[in-house]
Length: 458
Image 1 (cartoon, one colour):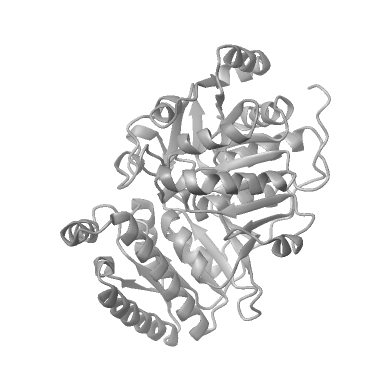
Image 2: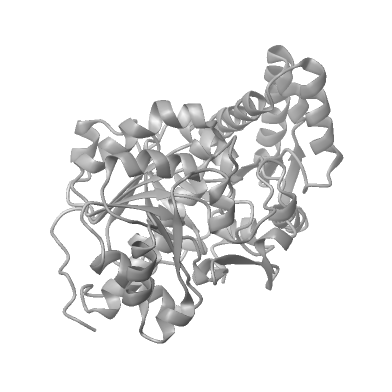
């Protein structure tokens, strides 16, 4: 290994996450590598940034994954420009580790087009993260489900995703539907043979602007991190999941640039928590069933009511009273919109939205915000110390309703879903503990772990 490029003072990575749960995963990858990292839940003011001066990772959680390309055109240039001013050598557009995207919604390609206009040089893309059960081989992405690996276009959830189903596991082919930027590849065989540099040179000589990097194991994770850090102009614009931060941290550690990881705290037990879920993932469905069988009170909220303002407000009031009643009986409420993709509630919502002539995207936004307002009201009234939001798109809208504006990681719950400390200028909300759980994240006992503090799930 050649002499590594030293780490500069100040921030190392500035990132924008296209949803909230994925953003917390990127924060986790840096924080638990010993690099102080803060995740803002909205674009921070200059004064708010000063409160976290000296932090090595600075992130902004966003909602781009659920937005149209026109929204990206209007919003991402200013966001990327702000990240550029933070002085970090790496600016990262953080995407889901299952590459959730389509030409019409959450377009990663459109984000790449915008970044390519503001930054020079090649754009590395790292999506795989073995710590999260994501692996890339010859450009194809694989993901675990219940401990079993699937090519992404055959994955039991992603192949049937209600918004961005994956019909292609070759990420370059999938991305070509969203951008005209040429995409190259450094595959794991080249990495294993010590030919990463020459493989990258070849891809760039062939005209690639985006270069996808395979990651299968710790060795390829380190090599991917090396290529990003040592072979890029600074500031660098990169695309990828939290695998990008994991790769950089792995390389920095292997190169002796990090003094050591932060000792991981254990999650302590609390008597009661409150949870809301807008996920329709079968993983979350199993987690809801497990939680209800182990002391949680499951409360279904009729999401189709969100097509009408008054009906939705009445539904929120009704569910709020049910949740407070559960808490009064020393139980933890878990409010959910559906139990998996086959729940009839999913079809009911879609049909109700269609009949009303409404926008499904707008209704989903209203559902997420409503769940956030519900969770805020319940947690304040019951004086709860800890809450959980499940579902990537749900988290993006719900978390912003809790009166907190930034998160720092406390301890791991499951890979990609740390328990966080909520920061707020409101003393009554400062210190609220929050976990943001993606639909595919965690074992069946995730909600129980969040309440009981058993420790990290692997």
